[in-house]
Image (cartoon, rainbow, N blue to C red; front, top):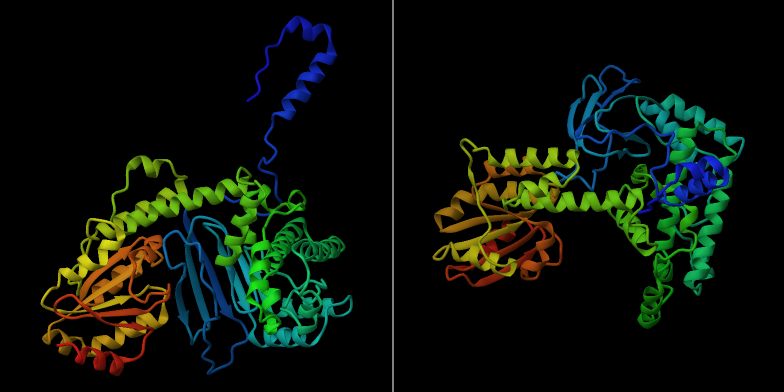
Length: 497
């Protein structure tokens, strides 16, 4: 903090003092202030964002499928997938996200930017989009082909109410779409410094290309963030380039390369994404978000706007995990969070407090004690019964498939004295979890996500579905990795007396 004691008479008599004071005051302003942006203003709140889509080239008898889409890996509430309604006859679809920060929503081959509270309209011409994709695959970008590509894009997709990706005449070297064997071989012996300069030189070349393209300030800023994200991804690929096509069989050399890697970057001051929380646009998937956090930490940018926001998000996720796992949350913990995070956590708390009518399953609280004690204590509650433990998540397709198929034999197994225990973690969506509890008889638990590995689950390798079978004395007799089908499960359960 800077403090100034000012003598008014001195100021009146000496203009140089005024200048000196102003310069000193400017020096006290934080370096990483929230910079202005040409992108849409992000109002910090929790609110639905809606995509209203329709196929415009439908013919009588067409029954379209909804477009493929990806989830939001950083969703505070859980699974991160939107609510979907789809009319295959009318060719319309609606996607509703409950979000508390901007989200880039990726479809297959195109994407839109969503803010909390947005309503976005998308007119989708399927045949024109197929023509666009075919031309894009077969034709390299240049000054002649790019206008044609953009023309096909405009025929394929019309978006109102959001920013979106554009086909741009930007050339990127072989790193963009993967590695050729020749490229990997040529750079196999690069040191980290050499690799970083290779990535940086390409980054500068692409930025220069971007500056020469006629774009709106909003479009240019958005594309710049994506290019910066691409630069960080390529830094991360330093060790991957050593492994590609099995170019090395020497684990010691690979370990040396991995040990050498760091996100410490002399070029960090020349990037812009971390100077605004809108830089979150650049981080769309789990690996990219982790890279961004590591880059911020390695370069001492924790006090930048984006660094502070990541910290806020992590703190909110920790409190949400407590709420989902039915662990007590102090009001002071909630009040310390930004209002948009508070709103989502309070909503989940209220949801979990609701009593479910006619529920097949039972919502259970975790036993007292350490995470290592939870599983043995849960199994001990069923002494005298065979215990079938199912580790799953609401977002896991094979998990849901296994639960559904086991319902066909559950009555038979329960008559034999088999008890069902379902354990998920806080990555699951709370609302979807309650629906599953209502549909599947058994004891249901939610564990804080970071505690799953701490529980020391037998033969668990951070992958689900995962199943454990215990005998009537509480002894583990079988661990099953992945859904193997009802017949396999019944075969294993029949071995237990």
